Amino acid sequence: MAEMSSSPSPTLAGALLPAVSGPRAALLRQIALAVAGSLLLVLAAKIKVPFWPVPMTLQTLAVLGLGAAYGPRLGAATVALFIGYGLAGLPVFTNTPPAAAGPLYLLGPTGGFLIGFVIAAAIAGWAAARQASVVRLVAGLVAAEIVILALGCAWLALGAQMASGATGIGFAKAFEFGVQPFLLGDALKVALAASLVGAGWSMLGRRG
Image (cartoon, rainbow, N blue to C red; front, top):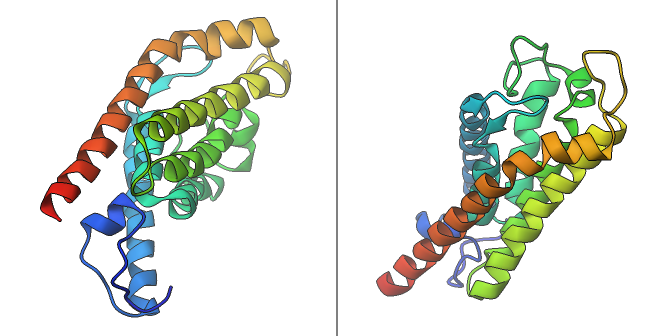
């Protein structure tokens, strides 16, 4: 990252935090933010309501919030870091334990949702940039949510390795059990994320 500039940060996190000088300090701050955000995702994954085959958690809210605050690149990298913990065998995913962490976990029912989180964080980061309109913010967060549900549903329908040994449960059941129960809750999460991001930028505008 370049030397400290007088130009305003395009991300909410960058605008809220004190400015840093030099690429090394900026890199260290990005690493610290990514680690902190990935730990928040671990916590969000463990706060759940057990549904079959996909539990309801606070991960969607955390993904949208982190993406919107961090920007597209750091937001997506933070979610990827969280997934990396799980691929390395750490029990950070929602169903670990009793399920075992590791690469094979992504073959299970929630694999599509996890991949969708990375893309959704990038979309949320783009939507929530400084001076973004309310329409762009809301539309971007809705698009991010659609990506999560679409990829999650498609994988659950066609490729998920189920405990019964079946591969996928078909689109009808995937929508019934993997999308429909989450529509209202996720709509509220989108609204909450948009409100928090808008309030953050408004606060900074008044302060500036």
